[in-house]
Image (tube, rainbow, N blue to C red):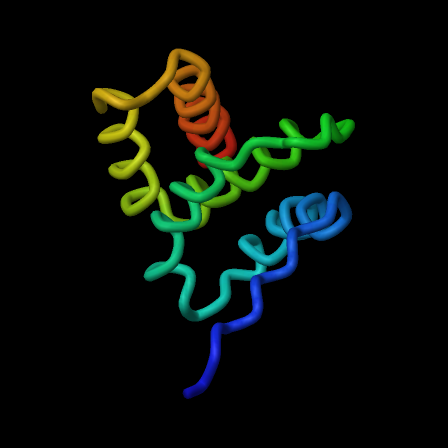
Length: 109
């Protein structure tokens, strides 16, 4: 047989922070597949928790969500509004969603 696949390595603090910190710049560069990935990326960002209490993490995640709203307003905006009124959304997530929509709209205005 092939045997069991090796376990995936745990993400380190640096890997997690680097992924979120560089995301805004990648989104703003508007890669060709962004329209297809914007809503799923927003979903991942909303569910992402900073297990390391990293300074500035919440702001980096918020900035990435705002960049998504600005770059793909229809796709990401529709997704965020659906989530805002969803059943399995915490109050904190609702506040985060409203903040991202508000800040994105302000940037687009």
